[in-house]
Image (tube, rainbow, N blue to C red):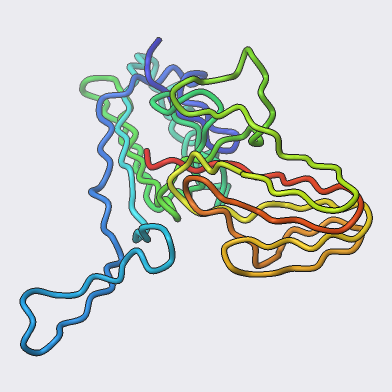
Amino acid sequence: MASNIKFGNFDSEKFGLNLLTRVPETMQEQEITETIPGKQGVIDYSMAFGQRIFQPYSIAYTFQKYIYDVSKRAKEETLLKNQIMSFGLSKLYDSNLPNNYYFLAKCSSDSVTNDPQYQKLTVALTFTLNPPFAFCELAEGTDEWDNFDFDFDVSQETSFEFEIGEVACLINNGSVAVQPKITVVGEIIVECNEETFTFSAGTYENTLIYLLPGMNTLSMSGSGSISFEFYKGLVA
């Protein structure tokens, strides 16, 4: 299948555009370093927050389509420009990504060239990705067999019910720390990454709990149930 992208209402495949080039920019890390007098080299604190932090980066695409009718070519040019630039920060689907993944992106540059000599349209699009990760649309613990990817997914429980306490492990199999949505019935105390949080019944989306890449051990006490909803992010 030919490579294609989808962004808002724009679908390169439906437009019949052929991808000529796909050029990702080199990712730049936000390094935190310190020079110590009398010591060789530098001290690198870049992993102080448990993950590598990157600058926004971009991907440039070039598409082409032959249209031999002059009026149809002009109409297509107008349609393309309007569909591409009508959306701000949105999901960008790229067939080069694994299934069910998307970039969170904004189209920062678009150019549609109408070439009457060769009767073709050339479409050049640049998307800025921030942060530079592809995110999964399926929550961890979904474990749908048809969508399970043995290269990237982990089968795990993300909901727990107890009367006194429980120690649970949540695996963030991605490359970026994620903030889970937490739903609680009862009253639960959670210890995670050396921090303690108390939750009464309700749903919480902006807590200070972050699941770092890899294994995260949570000590929970109280009575009731708690569930964690989170989505992995991959460098892509």
